[in-house]
Image (cartoon, rainbow, N blue to C red; front, side, top):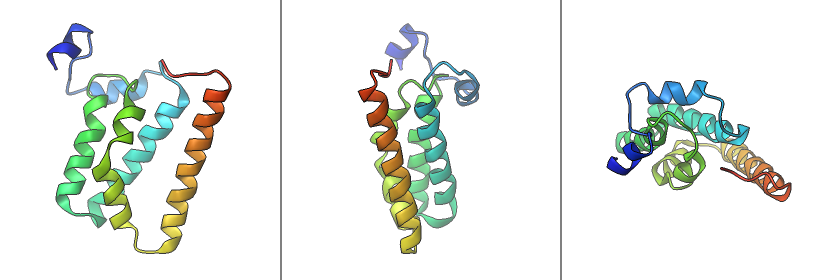
Length: 120
């Protein structure tokens, strides 16, 4: 956290709200963020508490700095959310929806990367 403070990205209690209202990143960062918010809310009811709490922590940690710049990297490693989402799904139709949403996001990322639109 000391290193992040040197770059002006310290953790602040209002950081998650600031991160959502500052539109200084590509739309795919917001897509990943809102997708994981949905998964974490869904886990409140359907997954074990320890998975839910750790998923929320790993979601809110990068947002606490007031930016979404590292959101894709952090959520790519948010294993508790991925495991909790799989445990929360009780039917095959939900799994197919999650699979379709994930494939759509990967296709969007591939298109953006292929178009020369990289992340900053």
